[in-house]
Length: 155
Image: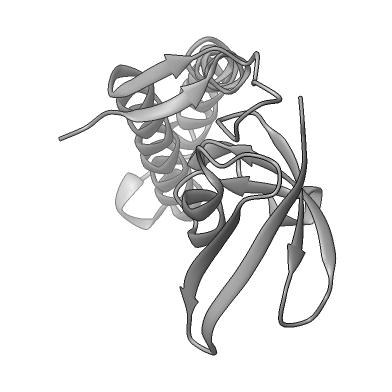
């Protein structure tokens, strides 16, 4: 299986989050479990059950972040302005609506549509990759084919 690509800054954010979860949150959870255990019978202790569930969710987050870091190819954030790639900010025109949007192509774990960051694995992200200014691309959507034009590429 091909490794997912992740930007250096995206990998750094994940490492930072992982470090926080491992060094700070684990200690907090251990303390919370210790306090809940001290409250008596574990079989009827709702606080203990809640703390155990919280701990399991946190451990799953740690494992997921570690897996992502272990199975990703880290690519340079220095996006080219000649061709769309990971980290590129693009201005595109939707031919159907005439709407012009500015979007940044990021890895899937960095995507946040509200911030204008779309995944390189999303339909628009995939379609735009390796395109140059003036190139058109088509994507399949539930509403039919959508055609876009790359108007501008920046870092």
